[in-house]
Amino acid sequence: MSQTPEDTGLSSDQAEVRAQKLAKLRQTVAEVYPAHFHRTLTNEELSEKYEGIEPDTLTGDIVTVAGRVYSSRNSGMFMDIHDASGKVQIFSHKDTTPEAARELLPLIDLGDIIGVTGEVRRTKRGELTVNAHEIIMLTKSLLPMPEKWHGLSDVELRYRKRHLDILSNADSKVRFQQRSKIVSGIRRFMEDDGFMEIETPMLHSVYGGATAEPFKTHHNTLKLDMFLRIAPELYLKRALVSGLTDKVFEVNRNFRNEGVSTRHNPEFTMLECYWAYADYEDIMDLVERLFETLALTIHGKTDFMYGETELSFKGPFKRVPMPDAVKDATGIDFRAIDNDEAARAAAKAAGFEIEDDWTWGECLAFIFEEKVEPTLIRPAHVTHFPKDISPFAKEVPGEPRLVERFETYCNTWELGNAFSELNDPEEQRKRMVEQLEQAHARGETDKRLDDEFLDAIDQGMPPAGGLGIGVDRLVMLLTNAPSIRDVILFPARKNRVE
Image (cartoon, rainbow, N blue to C red; front, side, top):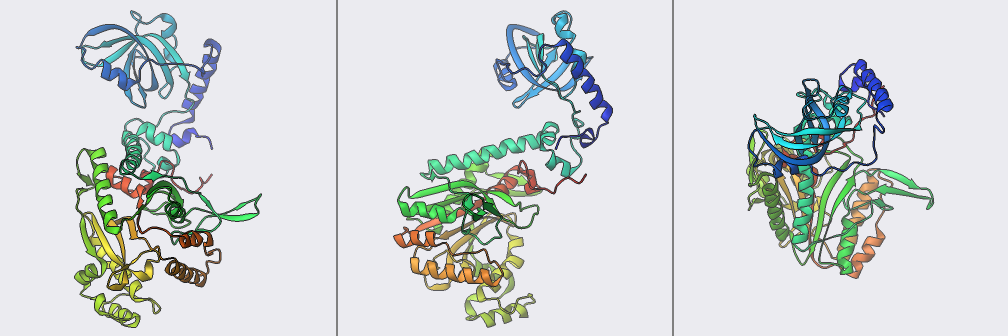
């Protein structure tokens, strides 16, 4: 859908004026949207190269730069143009700029993209400037820019018209540049640590690896219903079985047909990895090293602010078993409760609304979410999850109701989920069948057993630690973003109502 003048909060008259200028340009300029143009320096490179020149200095150097016009003063005599790297001032005057170039100035509006060739100087006030010898129209903008200093005041418009948000909001631009650094930093960290990245399918004929409602589609040629990936887990584990690598990862897009909130988007980015001959404690160390590295990449230090809260990604993080955390918060000792009925009774006696069919582990997890999660501000690993809710993790030795699983929390949010992975093929099949029966009981009729995965596990998967990290939430923390939609360039949204 094309942008209308009303989308920017400005009048249609300005758009009409721009259309008239375009018509005049087509009559007077050989090509308003030329196919070829080459600059000699980006604006950042220009700034770095001439950083040391003194005020009121002409260098004698001729450069070619380009960018979008963000400001214009004195009828275009002074213009600031921005490319992705920064800005430079353009000076057009009869003493330095040929008349043919100056005749273009009245046809240039804010938002137009121009190319400029000229001499580099620094003004008496210290502003790095290019004295224009030639000005070329590269792109005539037909719609006005958003108001420069306030950007887009309509939050939904910012998400729907992200290009306008970034054009008018320096904070948004920096945040997405930082996101790129975080994602590339994750890949670099994992590769430096010996992990190999592979690509797994996004279209699955059998969905699994997590509990979530999938998006469903249909392959016409194969006449096959398919599902968008909710997790890459079962394919990554097959890579461990294959012996391709002992340390595998993927930075992947997942799709879950569930709610939208400040921390949830139907399409999101995950880091998922599996490490043969490692366990969940090795993965905790990996998470701490990764988080510390990313904080240093973005902030140059491990301490940073999220809103009014000071956080630190300096390891080691606090490690606490879930039953201990619940006991400290509520006084209920789940380790001393030996059956489901007693667990439900204890929870109800403490004032919690518990379903009549919940298991011991479901009661423990629910109370943890209610009472402990809201207190987890500084980074912490919560360990020893109930087996009831963790079908792919190994049991804690001596505590068969608990498994070697942890979740990493910060600012009350779950950021990561990790296991000592189950690799007993008989136990794996048993748990997956139980999970399938539960799904069917909930009415999830599309859910099927992944026999190809189970066949791979029958071949033998080495003991391993596995991890999934929500990249978007991690980016939110590191860039001080209040909503997940502030860190996803094009987030899910409702259709525009006409």
